[in-house]
Amino acid sequence: MSGSADRLPRLLALVPYLMSHPGAQVGEVAAVFGLSEKQLIDDLQLVWMCGLPGHTPGDLIDVSWDGGEIVIDNADTIARPLRLGIDEASALLVALRMLAATPELAEVPGDALPRVTAKLERAAGEGAATVSSQVAVDVDAAPDALPRVREALTGKRRLSLRYYVPGRDEVTPREVDPTRIVVVDGRAYLEGWCYRAEAMRLFRLDRMLGVDVLDVPADPPEEAEPIDVTQGVFRPSPTDELVELELSAAGRWVAEYYPCEEVTELGEGRLRVALRARDEDWILKLALRLGDTGRVVSPPAMAETVRREAERALALYAHRS
Amino acid sequence: MSRRKTERLLNLVICLLATRRPLSAEQIRQAVPGYDRDGDEAFQRMFERDKNELREIGIPIDVVRDPWEDEPGYRIERQSYELPEITLEPDEAAVLGLAAQVWQRASLAEAASGALLKLRAGGVATDQPVGTGALELRVDTRDPAFPALWDAVRDRRVVRFDYRASGSETVRSRTVEPWGVVSRRGRWYLVGFDRDRQAPRAFRLSRITGQVAPVGKAGVVQVPEGIDLRAMVGFPDEPAEERIAVVRVRQGACEGLRQLARAVHPGTDGWDEAELAFSDPERLAGWMASLGADVEVVEPPDAREAVIRRLKGAMA
Image (cartoon, rainbow over all chains, first blue to last red; front, side):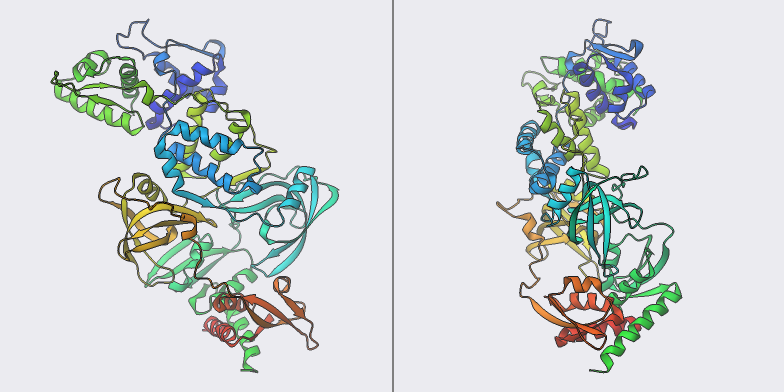
């Protein structure tokens, strides 16, 4: 909201905000509007130059910020904010409908959800209600693990998990101090301090094969910082090895499933991608799964590992077919 | 936007809201500072642009044509400008706060925070934390086609785009009447009527290449009554019938497979035998091939052949 193109809409929200929060502090208002104090003062100075036709002192908006306390007067014409645009109302309504579709996950107490949805629909008008019914976010059914995970969260207790890692076809025991539940793109994850990794980790709830709430209080260490999921859940480390794959049209799904550092079209639907391999075993399994729809280009040693493992596996079939 | 222009526009909004009677362009020119110093033509152009800019940010400007007057009159009707009175209980405000943080990026994140700001400006407190604060919900819209399709759905407008069907070597142009967009397991789909196929279809946004172009006028698309968008992106082609595969598993390996197996029968030659439920032999083969020399699919033959084919492909 700090760009100059957004300035008019901002001013048309700022004035009503100041009217409904008399005596608000400069710092506090700047934070609400995502501005620096200097930018806010500049906005106030601009507002102070505007008003009703005639533009005598009696017509102009009166605003002062002595001692950091903002007082506004003579702005009755624009005392109410502009109504919600269709996009604005729809963005909120789609999200509310998503929450409503997952009562177990959203865990909204009482009937606050239908109440606020109805109020927002009324305030938004017909257009937004229609659009928001045409955009839907499907959320997976609540996994079986949810009640026990939630029990541990609310009771602040440590969890013992048996966790399935499909990329390595492993089930590993984990002790985790849960911090919160994160739902990203319709899938539920537990965020918590993992004692095995000695780091904060996300665990997909539907990959928990066993969940026990331990009689131990959760006590994540101080360095346990919440994981930033705004860039997605799967974020390989930049220090992981960079692997290049060539994919046929039937192997393009790899580029849709995993974050690639580079994607090059090779024609006829073929792709070359570069991605970070979490470990060698993961990339080996991916290459074997792909069969003739993808092959490792580099590093060459990795390509050789794939070839050798495929050969060993084929030997099993040779003696019986 | 320059400071002078912002000032002029703000004065224009106040002027048009304050007036009881519609004002002619000339009256507006006299009343709003910033218009007065330019010639007639320059003023006309500036006024046209200003009206468009106000409409773009959602300000409804009425144009009143009185049969007795030559010039149209302009005004902003308070009722259609103002956010209606809305009061939220603390629990309702908390839910709204949770909803507003769902969108991660770009257009919708901005729209959601803009809406929240207007509501706060209108006196609604929206900053209470919800429940325990131990929940965060996020939805990504990183597909480049998303904003254009959102607009098309909103404006009921036909779209055309290039699309690569799953596994296809070629890209084809599609013309679609959009009925809606649906996110399923982190992937966005466009659902609509495919004009080329003359049938309803779902398209994965990540397989759209290049621009999404609007075709024809807004307001044309008719969404069929009672349509279930979510059901249209289901996987109806996945056979419900379950088959059983018999798989030899090296002892001490494939822990995950063992967990997911229907049954595991211990063997004596260093290998156990597991029974796995499956429906699509190709999907099963992908999984089995990924386990390399730790498994051997014994039966059924189609799954066994599929694994052999993949392993040979990986050898090449």
